[in-house]
Image (cartoon, rainbow, N blue to C red; front, side, top):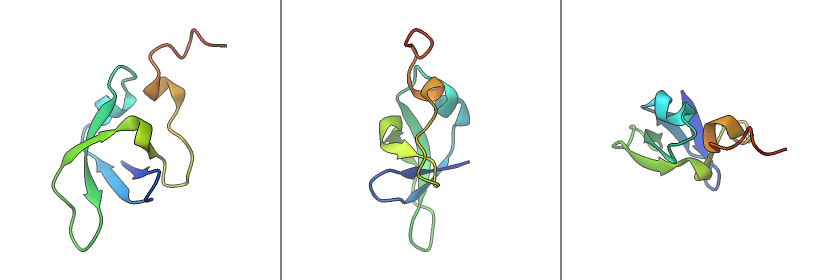
Length: 70
């Protein structure tokens, strides 16, 4: 699965999708797809990521209390 950095638009291949879906985890491990080769894996803050289409990540992936807010 791919997500994008909000500020640069660079694609990041998510290496741990469970961390992406878990609202209690604020970082994910991914590999940036920039240049001719994939870069070495590193951690990215979920708050700085979104979908390649420009949409934000769902609240249920980023906020552990999303059900309490109305």
